[in-house]
Length: 448
Image (cartoon, rainbow, N blue to C red; front, side, top):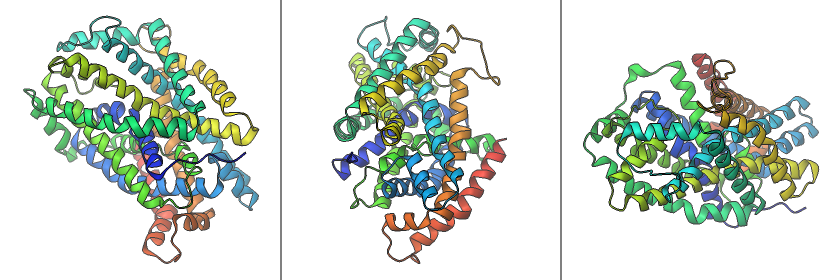
């Protein structure tokens, strides 16, 4: 079976950026930044993304293009060439990571479905400047077992439908036409948010670094968020790399993707955090911060209901660009390993993660499993913590060692540097062999 390819370099960059931009930027970045002290977290996140993130993205793409396979195929190919069979476990680990991420990510995707429907007038009024009403409204929704479950299943089905459409017609088309609109709408909302009385306090909290707030937990959260928001450590970029044509310049393309991703994260913080202070919300509200804050902004805009409808539709699109990329890793694995059709692979996968995902959905306060915890966390938070702070960093630690010591000739060939003594290749090799592993281990130990 001929392997799918991206229709164009532009479409590939937007698809990869769409995977990164998604809810990692618009939903997760503002509340994680807010709960980690604001400005200093922002600068640590940017530093990690532009160093660790750049090297790992180029590496993942190079491995995927060289093997013409997803993460499991990459490591299996290495074992055939004499590497230890133990490396194959890393590939299977990425499949598990993607499965667990989908289990909680589609819960948040369901929130975007529900809030888009609310913006259309379904389920009661959405726009109000009253912080307590908005918070109570969100809590009531996530605690409603029926509506939260239906929203979750709807989002999971949409994700699967797009992935069944394929790489070029499904994923690339979705990203190419709708992601630019999200950027424009965010800029409009930023301007309005910054003009609200009291927004300056939020702006200063977001941009002014306070070095005294640096902790081991903050470093782990920054690394985890960087990996999550750039779609690294879960096999996505390896899989996407397997669809890249040989003419595509990996370093240049990765710089574009990281630029778009970190810019979106930065804009999302500007969009959410100043209004948080303007309306008197708590910056430590948690995962529902964006859902609680933005309706208050819309309530202060002319034609606010139209802005709300456009925003939550585009937020739904952003969520889908990420979820389809995560599901694509598992689907590609099933196609490559078992020869299943794309449709069969996608629908069987969604049926499986709906079981674990509904558990995460119902574990919210008020849900049927509300109050039940594992290691002190409900299922939603447990999936999030396990993937972002443990599985993804460990996966990238193993990938860096593998790329630097076992598969370096492949990396060198795919990056396109004919001279192994070039500054770029020497720097990448040192970074993969020594700097990245040490950095990841130090950050994880600091967090513990």
